[in-house]
Each structure stands twice: as structure tokens, then as C-alpha cells.
Image 1 (cartoon, rainbow, N blue to C red):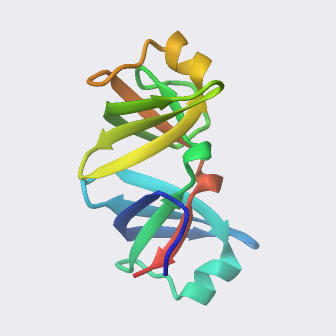
Image 2: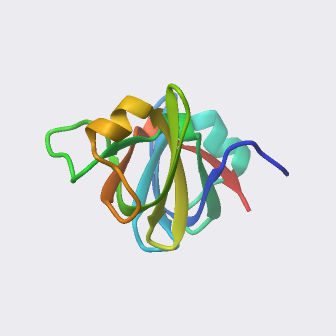
Length: 139
């Protein structure tokens, strides 16, 4: 299946915490980081997800925020440290390429944000992703 979502991170499910309608699914990425996805219980059942299931975590570039250091006191569960590998800027927006442990991410942020954060290739960043913005697909 071809998708327009550039951020496709391979991993394995390590835990599922089910509620009445939603579930949080913990995924250990290939690089060892842990990612949390909040998806419907119906999706968990439809995909047949269980502990040990290999999955791809999908995140749209527009759903990734960047920080220059880990952020404490924040409800965003997913904070992936990495390094900027490239930046393409336009009039209003920028596409920032980030190398994280055993994966590459693309974040679409405003050009002003790249300036405010002083982003450049080689700069350390933390990719922030809300659990509700992570989709899962089986492999």
C-alpha cells in the first residue's frame, strides 16, 4: 500500500491498555524508543493487535512539533530525540528532516519557527507527537 504519509516507523507492540472506546498502544520502535498511539478499540480488534504484533506507526509531517530539548510538564507522550539533517523553506512553511534512532522523520512547521528555534543541519531537536496523532498499520 502506498501512502502520502512520509513518517512510517517500524516497531512492535509491547502493551495495549483498553478502555470502553479507546486504547493506548505502546510500540517499541526499531531504534528502541517507545511510542504511544491512542486509537479506537474497534481498530485494535479489526487489526488483530496483540503484544508482539509488528506494526508501522504513521505520523503526518504536519502533526510533528519540534523542541530544542526534552520538554517536562507536557501532556505529549511521544518525545523522540534526533538531529536535523536538512531544511527546505518556502515563503511560509518549512520541511525539516530529522534523523532519530534508526529512522528518519519529516516535520512540517512554519518558517518562523525554524528561525525562532535557530534550526540548521546538525542541530539537536526533539520531535513531539501527540498519541492521538499516531496511526498504526500491520505489516
